Image (cartoon, rainbow, N blue to C red):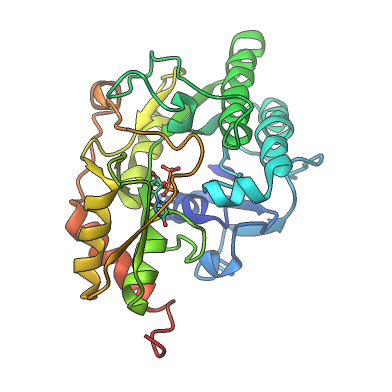
Amino acid sequence: MRALVTGGAGFLGSHLCERLMAEGWDVVCMDNLSTGDLANIDHLNGQDGFRFVKVDVTDYIHVPGPVDRVFHFASPASPIDYLEMPIPTLKVGSLGTHKALGLARAKSARFVMASTSEVYGDPLEHPQKETYWGNVNPVGPRGVYDEAKRFSEAIVMAYHRYHQLETRIVRIFNTYGPRMRLNDGRALPAFMSQGLRGEDLTVFGDGSQTRSFCFVDDLIDGIWRLSESDEPNPVNIGNPAEMTIKEFAETVCELTGSKSSITYLPLPEDDPKQRRPDITRAREILGWEPKVALAEGLKRTLDYFKTKVDVTDA
Ligand code: UDP
C-alpha cells in the first residue's frame, strides 16, 4: 500500500507518516515547508519506501505510480500562523483540497481529510457532536481557517457523492505532543517554553475558556482507524477531558518545575469560549477512545521541548 501525505513534514503529518511506515506502507510525504520542518522527518528520510517532495499542494500536483490513500494534512494550523498567512490558509483548504481530491480520483485512492473542531466555531452546543453545524464568524480573523476547512468538508462530500470517491473526514480537536513548533503560538508550546525559561505564562483573557487536549499518538490511532473504516461522514477525534486554560497553564507550569506566575493578556478576537468533543461516534464506529492521560502525555512532550529550549538564560 502506498500513501500520499500532504503536510507530511508538519506536526501531525510527520506522526502520520511514521505510523504508516510502521504499518508497512510506502509513503510520499509532500510539504512546502511553510510551517513544516524537515527535522520532523529526519528519521524517516532515507528509509526504504519513504520519499519527501517539496511541493505546494495548491499548485498542480503529480505523483508517479500507484497511490492507495491520500491524507490531506497540509495547512497552517495555529491561530498566529493563519493570521500571518491568511491567503495561503484559504488556498490550501480550497485549491489544495481540490488538487488533492483530483489526484485521489485519478489514482482511485481513498481520501482522508484533516478537518478541525474549528468548523464548530465558538460553539453554542456543548459538547460538540458531529451533527452540530457550528457558529463561525466568516469575516473574523479566524474565518480564514474555519471557512477553508468548512469548504474542504463540502468539496470532499461533493467528490464522494458526485464522483463516488471513497472519502473520510476527521474533525481534529486540540492535540499536543513532540514536534509542535516551539514558537507556533499555541497554548502548549507557549506555556512549556515560558515555564522552561522561567518566564511568566501568558494566559489570554481570564483563562476561563476551555479546551480538551489529546495526545498525538491517540489522535493518530483514531485517524488510522477512521481511514481503515467505511465511514464517509465526519468523525470527531479528540480527548473529551476538558479543562480551563488557566488550569492548563498551572498544570504545565508545575510540571516544568518553574516558579513562574501567570500574566493575563487580552483574549484574541473570536477565541472559542468552550470546546469538548463528543466522541460517541468514534467509540461506536471505530472502537476508539484516547488512552494517554494528560500527565503522561505532558511529560513526554516536555522531554521533547527540553531538547528545543535554550534554558541557559533562564
Ligand atoms: N492561549 C493562551 N496563551 C497563549 C496561547 C494561547 O492563553 O500563549 C489560549 C488561547 O486564547 C485559547 C487557548 O489557549 O483560548 C488554546 O489556544 P491554542 O492557540 O492552543 O488553540 P485554539 O484552540 O485556540 O485553536
